[in-house]
Length: 199
Image 1 (cartoon, rainbow, N blue to C red):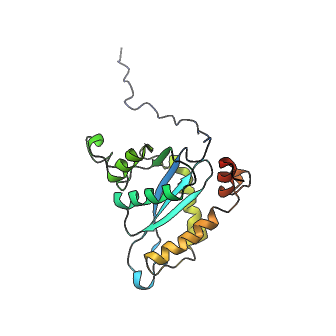
Image 2: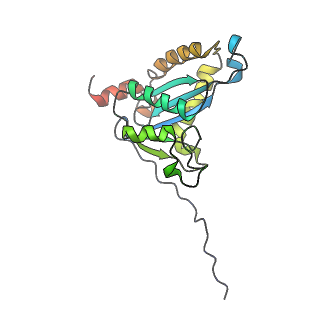
Image 3: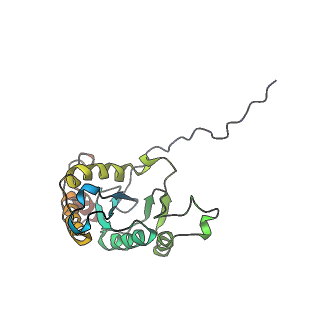
């Protein structure tokens, strides 16, 4: 008889979605290009990147603009995030972008940790990389980026990095104060406060 060939890649079955129990349990970080149309005046032709962190539990977000997406920017963003985040962060989740990790580009990632990965290690934060080609695992941050396109970037024009950062800061404050259906019509700030018991 013919030998049954064992499938080399048994179909990957995604884990059922885990409901987070508290703020900081898992925070997704991602980067998006600032659309070219938004960059005007002296900055025209420059590239800018929006880093976004979103807490899975409260949907609280922290945003910042950078001139490059690199492990330097990622580490800088991480340090700023920890300063503004109202709770301790247990786990950070990112995709496999080289601004976060070399996991896909080197044979032995354990010995080739990026600045970002080393920072997480020093800070005692668990680092979770999503599976390759499963962006839906970073779904919350991806969805928020689509919202940002419509709510913010459609009208936004930035003249330089500081100008962009200031506008993002104001938009960030606003977005943490928008009630969300998935939070039972509470805002991310209210979710955070409710949990941290400062109401």
